[in-house]
Image 1 (cartoon, helix red, strand yellow):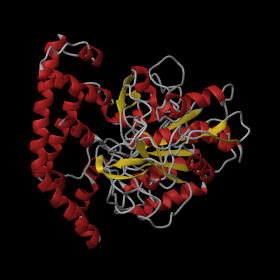
Image 2 (cartoon, helix red, strand yellow):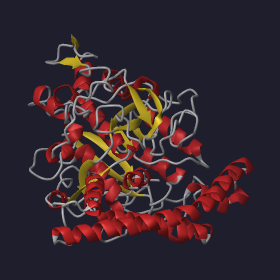
Image 3 (cartoon, helix red, strand yellow):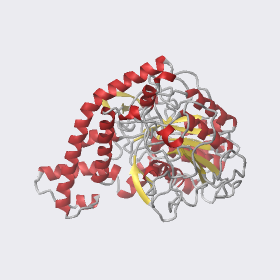
Image 4 (spheres, one colour):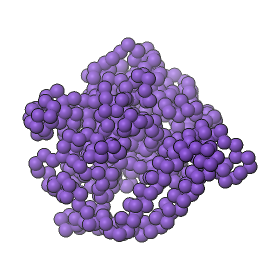
Length: 541
C-alpha cells in the first residue's frame, strides 16, 4: 500500500553549539536550542521557495528542520562527483521520460533493447531499466481482503485476524461514506466560492491570497481552508478527486466487491502463494495507463532521490550521482510479499546499492519471503530504506510489514533503516501528525510533509507521507555511498543514525496534542537525518 495521508488532511479541512570537527572541512552541528516549545524559532510562514525546497534547508541557519542539503553541496561537495550509485525504487512505476528524471534512469548494459531475448541471462527479457512485477495490474485488494477471500488455503490465526479487521472496516465504512460525502460537498462549496471571488476556474494560491474577503466569513473560511489544502494538493479539484476515490472504494467494500475479485489471477496469471513460478510481469515501467497516472507515487519518490540538480527545472533531488532502477511492484492497494521479495532480489543481483521501499501493510501471509530477501540483500551489501507508515501508530506494539524485526524483537539484519516523517515546523509539531513512530522500530526521522517533487508528464507536485521521508533518506544514503564507496551498508545506516540532529523537546504524536513524548523516545536514534553531518562523520570512518 503506497502510504497515504488523506486522513490527516481531512482533519485539517473539518543545544546551541558545535561539536568537535572531524577534519573534513566542516563541523558536526546540533540544533540551535533544545526547548523548542517555549522558544519558537520561526513564526513567519514559509515563502514559496522555502515551501518547495524545505527539505534542503539547514536548521541552524534557517530554523527549518531540513537535511542541510544546500549547505552540504556548498561547503562539502563542491567539485566532488564521487562514484555512481544505483538506487532501486520499488514502487508504483516511474515516468522514465520525465524531463527531470530521463538523465538519471538506470540502464541494464547487459541487455539488448527490444530483441525479445534474455541477453544477460538474469531471467528477465528486455529488462532495460528494471522490471514491472505487476504487469497490467493497477487496482488491487488490501491484504486483509485477500486473506478473507483466500482463507481456505491460509492459517486459521491469520484468517481470524484478517476477518476481524474486515468486519470492522465494513462497519466503519458506513460512517466514513457519509463523512467523505459531506467533505466533498463542503470542498465543492469552497471551490465554487473561490471561483467566483477570483473570476477564474483554475485559480492559484496567489489568486486566493489576493482576494479581499470584505467581512464575508464564508469567503474568509474558504481562503483559510485553501491555504492548508493547496500546499499539499495544489487545488481543491485534486482533493475532491481523492475524496471521491475514497467514496468509491467504500461503496465497493460495502457491496463485497473486493471478495469477488482476483486481479492477480485474472490479469497476471500468477499464484501469489507459490514462490517458484515462471517469470511474470513486463517492462512497462510506468504501468499500463498511457497517461501514466498510476506512476505518480513512484515518479514523485524517484524525484526526491534523484531529480537532476541545478538544471533549471522544477525540483532538485537529494543525490547528484545516482541511477534509478525502476521496479514496479506496488499497486493502488497492498503490495504482494512475493513481488516485494523478488524485486529486492532483482535489485541486489543487478547492482543496486540502495533500495527505497515507500510502502507497507499490517498483514503479511508470506513475510518470511521478504525477510529472506532482506537478508539476501545484506549479503550483497545493499541498504534498504523503509517508510515507517502513516497511521500515527507506535509500531513497537503494532506489527507493520516490511520490517527487519517483529515488534521490539531482535533485528534480522543490519542493512534496513526505517524512517518516520518530519513536519517543516520546528516545534512541538515537529513530527508529522500522520507518521508512525517507535523507540525500537523506527530508526530516524526525515522531511515528509508537503514535499515538492516530480510528477508524470513533466509535472511537479507536493505530496506528503513517510513515503517522502524514506526517499529523502535514501538520497542521503546514496550521496554517502557515492562519496565513500568503501563504507558497507551497515556503516552507512549507522552514519545516518549517529550524525543526525536531535532535540530534547517533547513532540505531539499521532496528531493528538494529549499524546506527547520527548523526541528521543519516538525513534531508535533520536535523530533527524542530516546530510551535512553525515558526510562529516562518514569521512572520519
